[in-house]
Length: 376
Ligand code: PLP
Image (cartoon, rainbow, N blue to C red; front, side, top):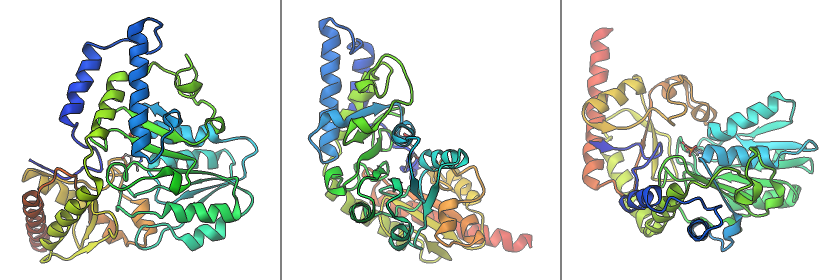
């Protein structure tokens, strides 16, 4: 089987799996317990924060809050920072539903929510952002890398614009699809909050983290025993936290991995040369959105599955719906959206896999076109 849906989830790092088991079965103590084994666990959680903080370009481990997912971290960033006196809230139109649906909820409640348009490349339209920025803006959320297209936003540029027009606004970024794949420096980016997810980066599912520069901007969104500085109650998920730490320690060289994946993506694209296909991705080589003319992308996904190759229709969260908000706002036609599929690579994808998958996808497309011609 060839797995090319790494933007949906990644396999668990082998060593992280072993660590997870160790902390589930042997070192299973509650970090809040006052006996030695408890404080050992508390130290472990802290050591994981140090590793994650470092991977985000900061040395402040107390600025890392563990959550049950990136969805929760995004909800915490937005709802935890939200105040009654908030002015305008700006969100990029490409946001994952874990941000977009929170924005929609706030909008329904009467909050002034506006969306930043996208360029045809999928990156935000900085001129549109600049038009929408003024002193009344309280909150900005712009994702680092699109889960649909791999488009990369220039977070530093967003920060500089924010500083010019509304220096006090809170700046959040969903960094899930950039984490472990691109260099991250939250201090250089100028973000107040940054979200990451474990399972997109070889850690287990059900663990995420939020970097927050200044914890006083956050109120909890769930209440309980006061863990995680009182911001995210609930007994710490030590097995997943420690596995997350291990997966991050095993990221390897981000630049070398990027170069390798770039080569893989190029090889894959070369194999599509005989197809009538439009490439909707211009930035990160890890995510490739493709629109095949005259066919249904869903059929292609199933044809590929029958040949032992897993690709996807789009983000796992939108794949069951017929439209695609992100591709639509990049200016793609209904036909291009209907014929779209997403292929996403990882540092473990090989050139041979990319070659075979590209060739097979091209063959599936040609077969499908032929079949549709006879059905007409
Ligand atoms: N943000 C982005 C950009 C994503 O791609 C995803 C998952 O697809 C999420 C957030 C949600 O992550 P999690 O599954 O950890 O809640």
